[in-house]
Length: 117
Length: 113
Image (cartoon, rainbow over the protein chains, first blue to last red):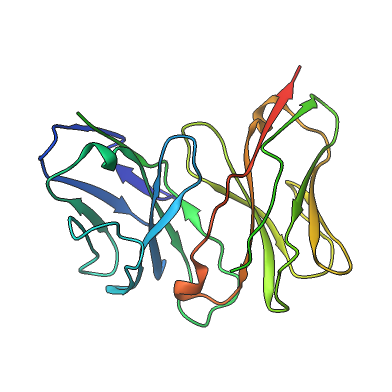
Protein backbone atom coordinates (compact mmCIF):
# COMPACT_ATOMS: atom_id res chain seq x y z
CA UNK A 1 0.00 0.00 0.00
CA UNK A 2 0.95 3.63 -0.24
CA UNK A 3 0.85 4.47 3.44
CA UNK A 4 2.24 3.27 6.75
CA UNK A 5 0.50 0.10 7.84
CA UNK A 6 0.25 -1.13 11.42
CA UNK A 7 -1.09 -4.41 12.76
CA UNK A 8 -3.04 -5.40 14.63
CA UNK A 9 -5.36 -2.39 14.87
CA UNK A 10 -6.56 -3.56 18.25
CA UNK A 11 -4.94 -5.81 20.83
CA UNK A 12 -6.26 -6.92 24.20
CA UNK A 13 -3.66 -8.51 26.45
CA UNK A 14 -3.87 -9.94 29.92
CA UNK A 15 -1.55 -8.37 32.43
CA UNK A 16 1.79 -10.13 32.30
CA UNK A 17 1.41 -11.24 28.68
CA UNK A 18 3.97 -10.32 25.99
CA UNK A 19 2.80 -8.48 22.88
CA UNK A 20 4.33 -7.65 19.50
CA UNK A 21 3.15 -4.74 17.37
CA UNK A 22 4.10 -4.51 13.72
CA UNK A 23 4.80 -1.52 11.50
CA UNK A 24 5.21 -1.57 7.71
CA UNK A 25 6.64 1.82 6.72
CA UNK A 26 6.37 3.41 3.30
CA UNK A 27 8.74 1.60 0.94
CA UNK A 28 12.13 3.28 0.75
CA UNK A 29 11.71 5.41 3.85
CA UNK A 30 14.92 5.56 5.82
CA UNK A 31 13.57 6.87 9.12
CA UNK A 32 11.08 5.08 11.35
CA UNK A 33 9.63 6.31 14.63
CA UNK A 34 7.47 4.77 17.34
CA UNK A 35 5.20 6.92 19.53
CA UNK A 36 2.91 6.12 22.44
CA UNK A 37 -0.36 8.02 22.85
CA UNK A 38 -2.30 7.79 26.09
CA UNK A 39 -5.99 8.59 26.07
CA UNK A 40 -6.59 12.33 25.68
CA UNK A 41 -2.89 13.14 25.30
CA UNK A 42 -0.62 13.94 22.41
CA UNK A 43 1.74 11.26 21.07
CA UNK A 44 5.03 10.82 22.92
CA UNK A 45 8.25 9.69 21.26
CA UNK A 46 9.52 6.21 22.08
CA UNK A 47 12.32 5.31 19.67
CA UNK A 48 13.90 6.07 16.30
CA UNK A 49 15.50 3.93 13.58
CA UNK A 50 17.60 5.01 10.66
CA UNK A 51 17.48 1.99 8.37
CA UNK A 52 18.24 -0.97 10.66
CA UNK A 53 20.11 1.08 13.27
CA UNK A 54 18.28 2.14 16.42
CA UNK A 55 19.77 5.59 16.95
CA UNK A 56 17.55 6.83 19.74
CA UNK A 57 15.62 4.85 22.31
CA UNK A 58 15.45 7.53 24.96
CA UNK A 59 11.65 7.49 25.09
CA UNK A 60 11.19 3.81 25.90
CA UNK A 61 9.57 3.84 29.35
CA UNK A 62 11.19 0.68 30.72
CA UNK A 63 13.33 -2.28 29.81
CA UNK A 64 10.13 -4.21 29.11
CA UNK A 65 9.90 -2.26 25.84
CA UNK A 66 12.03 -3.42 22.94
CA UNK A 67 11.99 -2.43 19.27
CA UNK A 68 13.75 -3.80 16.24
CA UNK A 69 14.01 -3.21 12.50
CA UNK A 70 16.39 -5.96 11.39
CA UNK A 71 16.31 -5.42 7.63
CA UNK A 72 15.69 -1.70 7.62
CA UNK A 73 12.05 -1.95 6.60
CA UNK A 74 9.42 -3.63 8.83
CA UNK A 75 9.68 -2.82 12.52
CA UNK A 76 8.32 -4.58 15.57
CA UNK A 77 7.68 -3.05 18.98
CA UNK A 78 7.63 -5.69 21.68
CA UNK A 79 6.32 -5.19 25.19
CA UNK A 80 7.13 -7.86 27.73
CA UNK A 81 5.06 -8.61 30.85
CA UNK A 82 2.45 -5.98 29.96
CA UNK A 83 1.07 -3.76 32.71
CA UNK A 84 -2.16 -1.76 32.80
CA UNK A 85 -0.23 1.48 32.39
CA UNK A 86 0.95 0.20 28.99
CA UNK A 87 -2.59 0.63 27.66
CA UNK A 88 -2.35 3.22 24.90
CA UNK A 89 -2.31 3.70 21.16
CA UNK A 90 1.07 2.90 19.65
CA UNK A 91 1.80 4.91 16.51
CA UNK A 92 4.45 4.27 13.91
CA UNK A 93 5.71 6.95 11.52
CA UNK A 94 8.19 6.92 8.67
CA UNK A 95 9.96 9.61 6.71
CA UNK A 96 12.04 9.54 3.57
CA UNK A 97 15.34 10.98 4.69
CA UNK A 98 17.80 10.25 7.42
CA UNK A 99 20.28 12.32 9.39
CA UNK A 100 21.12 15.60 7.70
CA UNK A 101 18.11 15.59 5.41
CA UNK A 102 16.03 18.74 5.51
CA UNK A 103 12.33 18.98 6.13
CA UNK A 104 11.29 15.38 5.71
CA UNK A 105 7.62 15.06 6.50
CA UNK A 106 6.54 12.22 8.77
CA UNK A 107 3.77 9.87 7.66
CA UNK A 108 1.88 8.10 10.42
CA UNK A 109 0.03 4.80 10.52
CA UNK A 110 -3.40 4.46 12.11
CA UNK A 111 -1.88 2.97 15.25
CA UNK A 112 -2.44 -0.11 17.36
CA UNK A 113 -4.74 0.33 20.36
CA UNK A 114 -3.41 -1.85 23.17
CA UNK A 115 -5.64 -2.58 26.14
CA UNK A 116 -4.14 -4.46 29.07
CA UNK A 117 -6.73 -6.09 31.33
CA UNK B 1 12.89 21.89 20.88
CA UNK B 2 10.92 24.98 21.88
CA UNK B 3 7.58 24.62 23.62
CA UNK B 4 4.30 25.81 22.19
CA UNK B 5 1.06 27.08 23.72
CA UNK B 6 -2.29 26.49 22.07
CA UNK B 7 -5.89 26.98 23.25
CA UNK B 8 -7.34 23.61 24.28
CA UNK B 9 -10.43 23.91 22.13
CA UNK B 10 -12.14 26.03 19.49
CA UNK B 11 -15.40 25.96 17.55
CA UNK B 12 -15.91 27.03 13.96
CA UNK B 13 -18.98 27.21 11.74
CA UNK B 14 -18.91 25.08 8.62
CA UNK B 15 -17.83 27.09 5.59
CA UNK B 16 -16.14 29.78 7.66
CA UNK B 17 -12.41 30.24 8.12
CA UNK B 18 -10.85 28.53 11.12
CA UNK B 19 -7.94 30.46 12.63
CA UNK B 20 -5.87 28.42 15.06
CA UNK B 21 -3.27 30.35 17.08
CA UNK B 22 0.01 29.10 18.49
CA UNK B 23 2.53 30.83 20.72
CA UNK B 24 6.18 29.81 20.54
CA UNK B 25 8.01 32.68 22.20
CA UNK B 26 11.23 30.71 22.82
CA UNK B 27 11.66 29.54 19.22
CA UNK B 28 15.26 29.47 18.01
CA UNK B 29 16.51 30.84 14.73
CA UNK B 30 16.93 27.40 13.17
CA UNK B 31 13.57 26.02 14.27
CA UNK B 32 10.62 25.64 11.94
CA UNK B 33 6.93 25.78 12.80
CA UNK B 34 5.06 22.59 11.86
CA UNK B 35 1.36 21.84 12.01
CA UNK B 36 -0.14 18.36 12.19
CA UNK B 37 -3.70 17.30 12.83
CA UNK B 38 -5.19 14.11 14.21
CA UNK B 39 -8.67 13.07 13.24
CA UNK B 40 -10.38 10.70 15.66
CA UNK B 41 -8.96 7.14 15.53
CA UNK B 42 -6.32 8.06 12.98
CA UNK B 43 -2.63 8.85 13.14
CA UNK B 44 -1.42 12.46 12.93
CA UNK B 45 -1.35 14.01 9.47
CA UNK B 46 1.12 16.62 8.26
CA UNK B 47 -0.50 19.91 7.21
CA UNK B 48 2.12 22.57 6.61
CA UNK B 49 5.37 24.03 7.90
CA UNK B 50 7.34 27.27 7.63
CA UNK B 51 10.40 29.13 8.86
CA UNK B 52 9.58 32.82 8.68
CA UNK B 53 7.64 33.46 5.51
CA UNK B 54 3.94 32.82 5.20
CA UNK B 55 3.14 29.54 3.51
CA UNK B 56 0.11 28.18 1.68
CA UNK B 57 -0.75 24.79 0.31
CA UNK B 58 -3.89 22.96 -0.73
CA UNK B 59 -4.86 22.29 2.88
CA UNK B 60 -4.12 25.49 4.75
CA UNK B 61 -2.21 28.72 5.16
CA UNK B 62 0.41 29.44 7.81
CA UNK B 63 0.99 32.98 9.00
CA UNK B 64 4.12 33.54 11.11
CA UNK B 65 4.63 36.86 12.88
CA UNK B 66 7.69 38.89 12.03
CA UNK B 67 9.31 38.16 15.39
CA UNK B 68 8.44 34.47 14.91
CA UNK B 69 7.04 34.23 18.43
CA UNK B 70 3.60 33.18 17.27
CA UNK B 71 1.79 31.78 14.27
CA UNK B 72 -1.71 31.11 13.00
CA UNK B 73 -2.94 28.17 10.97
CA UNK B 74 -5.82 29.13 8.70
CA UNK B 75 -8.28 26.66 7.21
CA UNK B 76 -10.03 28.96 4.72
CA UNK B 77 -13.35 27.10 4.41
CA UNK B 78 -13.74 24.64 7.25
CA UNK B 79 -15.76 21.48 6.65
CA UNK B 80 -17.06 18.91 9.09
CA UNK B 81 -14.16 16.66 8.09
CA UNK B 82 -11.74 19.23 9.51
CA UNK B 83 -12.91 18.40 13.04
CA UNK B 84 -9.70 17.18 14.68
CA UNK B 85 -6.97 17.96 17.19
CA UNK B 86 -4.45 20.37 15.67
CA UNK B 87 -0.87 20.30 16.92
CA UNK B 88 1.61 23.14 16.54
CA UNK B 89 5.21 21.92 16.85
CA UNK B 90 8.50 23.80 16.57
CA UNK B 91 11.67 21.91 15.79
CA UNK B 92 14.85 21.91 13.79
CA UNK B 93 14.39 20.67 10.26
CA UNK B 94 17.30 18.28 9.88
CA UNK B 95 16.46 14.67 9.35
CA UNK B 96 17.20 11.62 11.39
CA UNK B 97 16.51 11.71 15.09
CA UNK B 98 15.97 15.44 14.71
CA UNK B 99 12.75 14.63 12.90
CA UNK B 100 11.27 13.43 16.16
CA UNK B 101 8.10 15.39 16.91
CA UNK B 102 7.28 16.72 20.37
CA UNK B 103 3.50 17.01 20.60
CA UNK B 104 1.80 19.24 23.15
CA UNK B 105 -1.87 19.14 24.01
CA UNK B 106 -3.00 20.66 20.73
CA UNK B 107 -6.26 22.47 19.95
CA UNK B 108 -9.41 20.42 19.57
CA UNK B 109 -11.27 22.09 16.67
CA UNK B 110 -14.95 21.34 16.39
CA UNK B 111 -16.54 22.36 13.09
CA UNK B 112 -20.28 22.74 13.49
CA UNK B 113 -22.99 22.71 10.80
